[in-house]
Amino acid sequence: MTATSSTSSPPTARRRRKNDPESVRADILAVATREFSEKGLSGARIDEIAEKTRASKRMIYYYFRDKESLYLHTLEAAYQKVRLQETELELDHLAPLEALSRLVRFTFCHHAKNPDFIRLVMIENIHHGRFLAQSELIQSLNAGVIDALADVYARGVESGCFREGLDPRELHWLISALSFFNVSNQHTFSRIFDWKQAAPENQQKLEDHVTDMVMRYVRTDEALR
Image 1: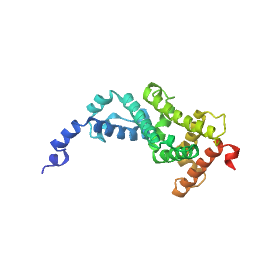
Image 2 (image 1 turned 45 degrees about the vertical axis):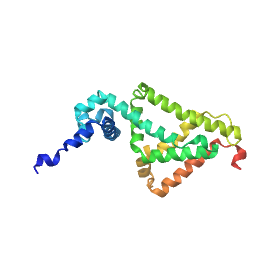
Image 3 (image 1 turned 135 degrees about the horizontal axis):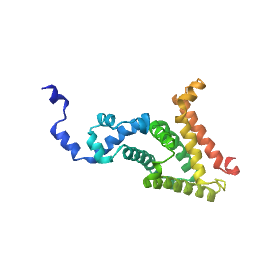
Image 4 (image 1 turned 30 degrees about the vertical axis):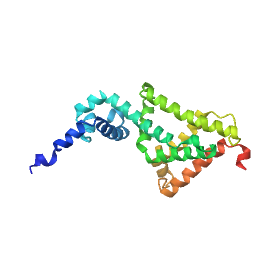
């Protein structure tokens, strides 16, 4: 076997990839997510993304037009992933207290397990949300999570376990902020206070604390007794 034949893909494998554009797109987006989250929009290079995927540079441009378009699609895929997983929680089938608790714990754990998502959001904030604002998909996805949270909250108020007067968007902000900080500031916080924040036992404590704080914030005085 020659060196050339040992490193090149078999013809059948190349044909399979060519006939499976969704797989190729998914591969490109997975690598692009890592590159953009680590290096930002300005630092990421299409050449490097192509080298780390099964696609050529020409193929990346064929699917995504240019680097900014690829970045936007990467953002959309990241938000689509978390919102899809949220729908799988089936909150509408749960009692309000259980539904909210499940959502909080899911958000905390999702962010902890997906630091690339947090870094992408941080990078998009550097760009003042300019690319996010161009995406109707992201807008509709995020509107959906507010609708789901509003439904849980309304059912909780009706049943008497949640206090009145809260804005679902502000409640979502609170859940997101507590879960986001756990990842975005993990390294600096751990070094400043000499604390192994990422240790499993500490992550479990923080997940419990965040859930307890949110639940205490929304529950009525009677429900807390």
